[in-house]
Image (cartoon, rainbow, N blue to C red; front, side, top):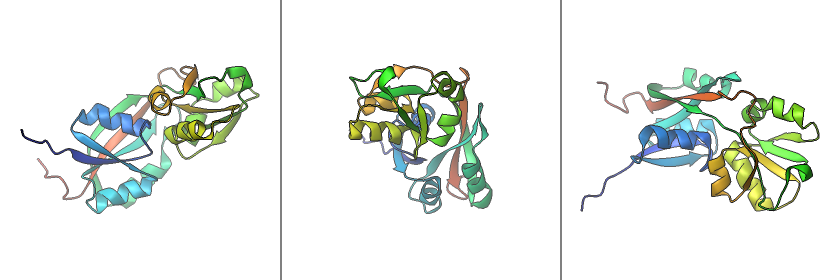
Length: 192
């Protein structure tokens, strides 16, 4: 039986992150997703040849250009070899026995919080709190096991970290998309 070697693709975040979902959508089952803590670490994994590709969010239809990644793209020795758009559906996630009335603090990535401003205006008692990324905020809530806390992340992150969806589609714009570039180092993929 022939073993198929998967292509290593780095992304910023942890399983359940939107970048991780973009890898699965673009590469299907041909990729081994490699989680990185920061966008800079993602870039270095590509530049140093540890991963052939990187999945970079560059633009969101609600909040515009994702400045940290666009700055890195302009300053580094990578090239864009593909692109994909992913519909972003944010969900309010909490512990399995939680209810919306008891939530006081909501964690998520700053971009996700910006994409949910209307939700926070509807529920002004919820304190939006910045966290490293959406999936990491879901994992954090799951590990803390403290009532009164929630995360804004994907339903996939909710499943992975065993959280309940308290409210679906809390993003302000229902047609909320993030556009991603697939990058590789110059000379890392043969030009066709």
